[in-house]
Length: 501
Image (cartoon, rainbow, N blue to C red; front, side, top):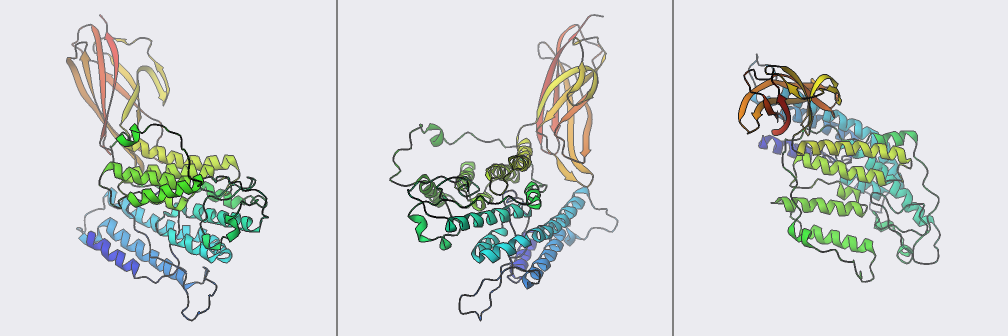
């Protein structure tokens, strides 16, 4: 398999350079999926004088190369997923995992082509306004998931608009600096503001260092299509490996550090100090972390980059994390960035809705990382659904009586299959007396649930028969649930009494 991947990478690197892959890598940096071949705008050798840098058009040969690369990528990825090199017997039917992997490969290729078509107009517009900005955007598209390409293209356009306003605006008196929000440059509605960071310093006039500027008019509202594009910024399903690890306690050096005032910054702004901290931490980090602490230092670096407004750097996958951890951090950072990006989406409610999509993705990843939880175990007369039941008046039963038991399950793992979102839970139970002695035990059939969407409210209804030969007194019913997809175990219990007949 390693040899096949190396051959695929060589094939992709050999493709003509033409338009670099598009962007939005906050969310899928560690899923192990391969990127299509690099594509960057071509330059003719004959242009000795500084020509106008090429922009992308529908007729650009680079786009044809990109599409050809996508096709080769999809065919090769499908072979890798389905194991076509192993020629199975003719009578062997493909397994569910093979079918799901094949469908994933086909869907991935189609989504990348569709995502490129959606951002093509934005790339052309950015190229007309600033070829340098276009090159900067294209340079980051390779390492980003297609689900985030539109958001980063919109963000680049917003940065260009604001930069143009800064250049065009009049120079006021005074030298007041206003911090910019992460994920966006200094707000257009902030008086006498100056951006903390500029993505394209080569186009910044020298006068920008001598004083702050008044912004021009507030950036116009985005069109309905652009607003809808922001709401579509969701990460496609990630087939993450199972992970049961929990987050460790903070490093001793961090936990022991006392809270102290910031003190004198030596005449530097907080933005400059923040950038120095980013540079210092970047220099200390290893590209191949060996411990959990080293891997989490990469996460801290991305938090600093987000605070500085460098979304593209914060979007990069942190090495050393599991796929599920990367899914959490990517979506958490993207949720924060989306809520703070008041220039790209000025409607606060739409911004909150878009941020909520990413936050739910982050919560789903935390569910997979967390321990399996069994809660709200209740004896019931009637069970209608999740959270809807009629509990028994008293948990007093007779020997051999049949009882209904309700329990809610959290932090289970769900995987995508052709039949739907799949959850698999096995249950066993024990009846213990008041001294902890085992009175009875058993198992119930495994629950294999398939649903069109991932279940957020999961409950199980049990019908159990209490032991026939048992003395009156107090007892405890213990449930043990096993998440067969996530390799996790959870426990729940409830007390009851056996009354005299």
